[in-house]
Amino acid sequence: MSAELPDYYFRVRDNGAFVYRVDTENRQRRIEMDQIAVVNIRNGDIKPHGGRTLSDQDLDEIKTWMADRTALLAARDIDDIHRAVDYLNTTAHWAQSKASLDQLEMVTDDLLLAMHDLRTVLVRKKADRLMKARDAT
Image 1: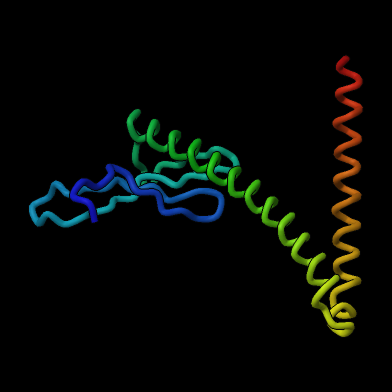
Image 2: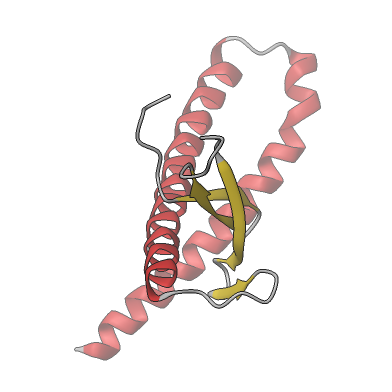
């Protein structure tokens, strides 16, 4: 562990985090974490914990973390989609070269339905974008 600890710790949870102020400046030189807020990224709520009033520094740190976390989650979403494309390519290769008839029978209907659903959504979204682009000109 590094000698210099951050002033704040964010315990990540679904849709946000619990925010703690980190304190090592006490008589025992122990690490103390005092919960100061609960954050919800989805709706932007910052709720002080236990009747506290958050300082401007607290709010600045929390808002910076929220922006960084939102960007990280968005990057992960796109990365997951790129992985899905890779999985689709791997699945096509598997179906063509390695899968047994029994294995294909087990997955074909589910794959076809999922791909049909995805194709329907993608085509509709693409058409919407093309219509908006045409209307904008």
